[in-house]
Image (cartoon, rainbow, N blue to C red):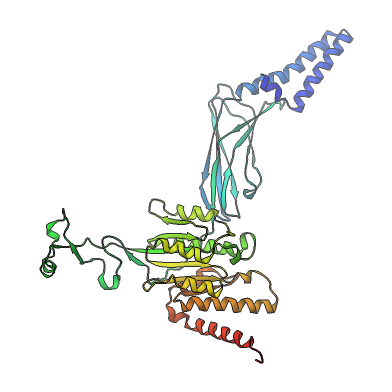
Length: 439
């Protein structure tokens, strides 16, 4: 009852003030009828406070997010289910779910009445244009009596998290060479030469099945040799995201870094659905493996929260990639590079490693004067040339380019980029000639 009295609304307090005034007038004018009216007026807010206070601790609430993970720009449905656990019906329930600013304004919903032991559900939708992980809740319920004389607020502590992942774009199916790597007892070999049945041998170990003894090798070596287990082959890829703040331009959802994050997410999902085993590496020290148990969640959840880093350099990124080499191919989405940094990345390409680099010219996200634009284009061409010389497949990215249109270029060999190398060589030679005195 005390809680209910503290929850009196302005209307309820006005009723009590009116009742007190009527009671005073009844004594001043010796009118008993005014006292009866005062008692009736005072009874209404008091009954409302008792009624609301009675049902305050008899509610249960559950929240469901459909789905828990949604892409940027898509909507998610939030379902609130309230159940009246008391034996008395409730009054009007005013619901307000707390949301972060990025998900929009707080929804305000109304439930007219819940009978005893009755449950009811209401739903609303949210949309985020910025990726991230957001808390939905807690739910605030305002309980009122039918006359609006008393209102109490109850907050349910439960909070759910909505993950807004980068936009994932469908990519055309292309054949990427150099993606196979082996696991098991032997090192990776070329599928084209050996196929899936690896007939290589090794020395006999205690417990090996004698039916696996390879007698020809045993006679040649002079000790018992057995066939190796069948070599399982799988497609592997290491994805590299360049998150250096100096390498990107623009702000908000249209920045070049957001293009890079969306590209990595799209490539990751495309390769995952094609049966690849993935590893994600960023310059912030992140090294994630996408296992079958994790599904798409491990990489997407990280990409939902990844941010630009003021720290980190290309050398540190290369060290992290080399720290644990799983074979397969390397696909990078890179920002601005100097020729020296591009040469360092070129060292990642081993003799049997295919490296694909989507080189973003993030200066195209800015409106630059003509002279600065020419200088930026020359710097971008020089970095692309360094990657091409290092054996990388380089795909240039400018503002407005769409990843599905660029993706088929990742499947072409170095011959497909010969003309780009020639153009970059011409640009570099021209720039050097222009810098000489008397040219």
